[in-house]
Image (cartoon, rainbow, N blue to C red):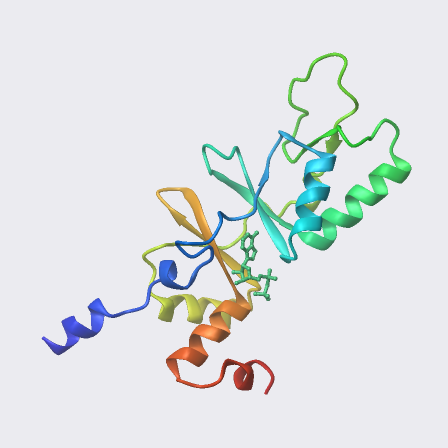
Length: 177
Ligand code: ADP
């Protein structure tokens, strides 16, 4: 009985991941439908270290993960050095450029900065296991999925805060000691 009770109170990945139920949705990039200016706006409006890349907002199928700094540098470099790259150029992370109307500006391939196999766990994974994975693999973040769809993200700092909460300690004391 006791063991069962303990199990039912186990914290799961879905309890720790962001966004929380009341938060706005995860900030993502789409694989071949965002313009340079859309990505620039997203980087300007958020401070996240990285962004999951999905097939489309409707599908939420995970394609990979892009680091903020790589995205910023690649766009800046392309704007300066690559002919035809303008605000309305479409960014694509796929192998080939998506079909676009003939009048469209050159598109920008950013596949080289895409991590194609970011670590993922399902929303039902117990946090004990997530903590173990972070420790053993030295991860910066894991993505959380349900039935193959992207649901959320857990960063190293989220894990540290969770551990601190479990230990009933001030989170700062764990983070900075
Ligand atoms: P850190 O957790 O080290 O501060 P971030 O700045 O990337 O790293 O993340 C800050 C918070 O926002 C974390 O709680 C994380 O779970 C969440 N987060 C990270 N990336 C995203 C994203 N792309 N969309 C929404 N929330 C995110």
